[in-house]
Length: 103
Image (cartoon, rainbow, N blue to C red):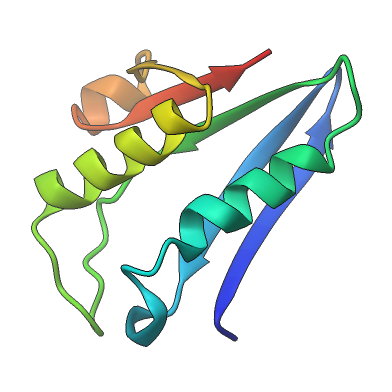
C-alpha cells in the first residue's frame, strides 16, 4: 500500500477517518493529490469533516508531534477546510487535536 484514504458517511456529512502515505512515498505531494481526489468524489452539497490527532508515534519515520500536526493542518487548509482546536473532551485530552470542516 502506497497511500490510503478512508471515510464514512455520517448523516449529512462525510467524515475522513484516515489519510496516510507510506514513509518511502512521502514528500512527493501524494497526500495532497489523494485528498483532492477523495474530496472530488464527495457528492455536491455534502460537507466533509475530520478530526486529527497524532498522539501515537510513527515507528517507521518518527517525527515530532508538533511537526506532524503542522503538516496535517496545512494539508487541510490547502484543501479548503476550516481548522479549529478540537472541542472538549477530546481537546482537553489532546490539546494539539484539531477538527476540520469543509462545506
